[in-house]
Length: 577
Image (cartoon, rainbow, N blue to C red):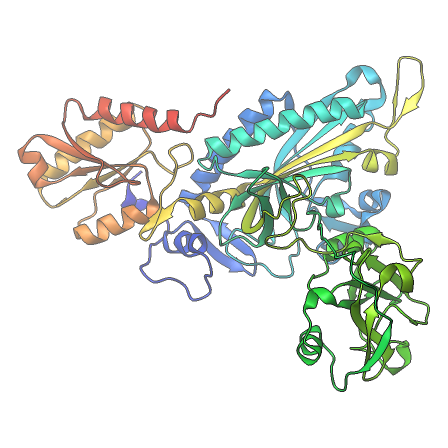
């Protein structure tokens, strides 16, 4: 491929709406073009990258005995109604009707389609286990697309679905998929990706893991323990707290606190710490707008995922009005009267001498002792884990919070979908059972952008050789010099005949423009043909990742040297068996 013919342009300026480097570099480098909010077209360099990622994924899925299929992009709403998700999933699911008025959805995930495809095939135990997968365009009407390909509305995804006759078989296969994912990310050039325990969310199931690339550009919060290696997404991380239980209980005493509505104001007014308070956070259920009052220690924040999982339904921040029966800013657990759902975080269990609202304008209580004053309270984990918090595994105060990009996820779905959609198999004794499922997803475009985020410098991406758009970037300096041009043309032909993927820049442009474009394209091996090199009958070879790694080789030996270097770079990304 000649660079002069490559569709797309490269720019020096960073677009104003780019908030992370990968977004800026992939726009500047001519990898993609904005179409609409959260929707991009892929130009040839990005398409070559994603095709290579897809091939790595196919090889690893095939090694797991996966069989590639393809589901429709547009699905009848009846499939989602069978599973119950047509009503339970929010506006992220794009609903529409065809010309006959039949309700349809744009597939954002394909569990229902997978069950529908194999529901008849999987009617007998002798056909289990099996796994099907696809690489398909999906659409999720994301409320806040951001960061280029990191969070989009239209995307390409590999999703796989395995079917089993026992939980034990699912668990064994789940571990195989976990290892396959580690291989995929290593081969794509980011072996540092971590697996973390996660919340299953709308997917359901008993166990799930997310694969996270730790980077300040990530939008997920990851809880890590430096002592024992515990890892979890913030949504799923357990919050462990300790309370002083040997203090002398104080009497519950009302204290006038005029115009004090927040924990910060209360602490300043009374000279106490937030950990010595009990705060109320109020929500309303989406279904009927009824109130949910959650009490937790004042230095903690609510983990809304834990809350919705406990309630089994979605909530939104409450709008408190005069007739609600709640006194905003002064809500407390003692004397709270009304038809509310009242919940207690376990950070309050056994706590003594807390300050809380008195359910009366301008007043708080001091001396709240949970066991004495709220003897019927039931405690659950509703709080977010905190920096320096207690690790739920080793018990040490060693938790840290990092940012990460989710590049893949795996779920043990169990029988949620097969049961809802009436998929059954008959065992050897003729008894019917619901098969159990696993689900395994990777966003292809997001993975490409994540590699760019992890592998770049100030000049552009540094693509790993396994997914780079081309393996070699041949720069012909002074293409107006006939001998230089002829020699570079001959080398270009020789590289192609050797099966090496090469992008050839034979434009008559300055060295600054040529090298700037080469940096933006991030191709691993760069060859430079110039008048000076021609005089010495040699070609200069350098690496994109380390421009000090330079060698000069004769025309006779340059192609074998290039092949050797490519093989070395490939070997570096080969994961251990």
